[in-house]
Length: 315
Image (tube, rainbow, N blue to C red):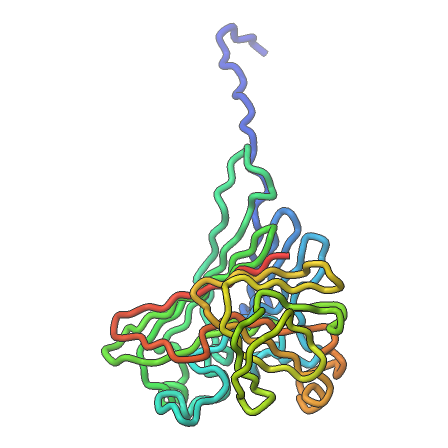
C-alpha cells in the first residue's frame, strides 16, 4: 500500500442529536401514540380524537378509563378525554342542536391525524426539553350523512394534543367555514385518575357560582374546597386555575385558556351501577372528572369566525 504524504485528514466527528420523541400509528391506523425521550407517553384514539392514556416517566397512568370502555369505534369512550362539541348534554330547547345526541358528535366521529411536530433539539438541548404536538382534524365534509342532516353547518376543527415532560395540553380551534352563523359549546371531558376520592379536594372554585345538575339545576355558591361525598354533577364559572389535591398533596393543576367553565363530575354508587360501560362499579373511587369548557351558555360563530380554547394539566 502506497503511503500518500498529502492524504486528507479524517473528518471530525459530528455530535449527534439527542433522542427525539417517537410517534407511532397502530391498531389498523386507529390509534396514535407518542413517547418522549424522558419516558412520558400518550395514546389517542382517532375515534373521537380521545386521549385514552397519559403516563408520566415512571409509567404511572394519569387518566381513568373504564375497564368496559369501547375502543373499537362502536361508541364514545368512557374515560380518558372525550371531546364535547357542539352541545354539552342535550339541548331540546335549542333549535340548532336539539336533534343531536348527548354531548354532540365530536366524540363519536372519526378524526384525521394531521401530523406531528416536536420541539427543536440541538446537541446542547436536554432531553427534558423535548415535547411533541399531535394535530387532529374534523370537518363537516368528513361527517356521516346522518350527522350532516342533524347539524347542517359548515365547519372545520383542529384539535391539538401536546405532551411535555411536565404535563399535557389539549386545545381546539373551531372555524365557521360556511355562510350561516351557528352556536356551539365545547368541553374536554377529562377523567383524572386518583387513588381515593374521599381524600380529594378541588381548590380554585371557592366562592364560585355553579349549576347543581343533581339538584334540579339550581344555582348555588361554592363555600370552601370542593369535596366529593355523593353523586356530583356541577357546572362552575371560575378563575382559570384549578388544583386537585389528594391527602393534602397536589396531584393535578389545571390551567384554562378561554374556557370559562369547569364541570366537576363523579357518578358515585348508584349512577355508576346504572351505566353499562362503567367498570369496575366501584371505579368512581379512583376517578374525578374536572372538565374545562365553555358550556354554561352558547358561543356564536358568525361566517368566517373562529373559536379557540385550551387546557394545560400538570402534576
